[in-house]
Length: 118
Image (tube, rainbow, N blue to C red; front, side):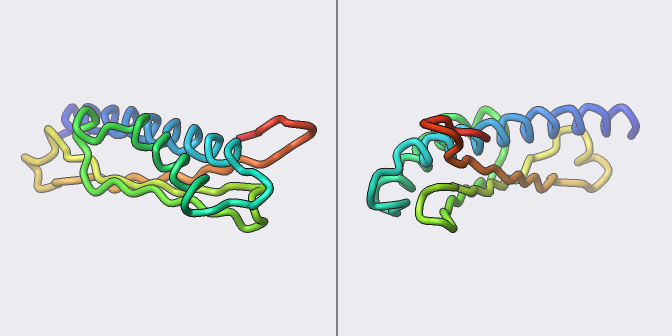
């Protein structure tokens, strides 16, 4: 059980790390795409969604039920995002554990000049 837990925990860490990276890149892309019309669902949000989908592949991560949402509380100056997924466990299934729920948050905001910060 200890070895199995270690294997699945290392897999969960890897997936969570990739989920965080995908979330970060998505909000940066969404923030970068913001124009004079603010953060719109038809343009900037689609850009963020596309970056997330490119950077997080459910199949290679052995994950399911992946979701990403992004919003802007201040009309595009800051873009926030949340991402979640479920990791199918490999070894711990023997002991009755099927999945890990993983979730991350990310934010990108316009700083000095044309610099984006995560």
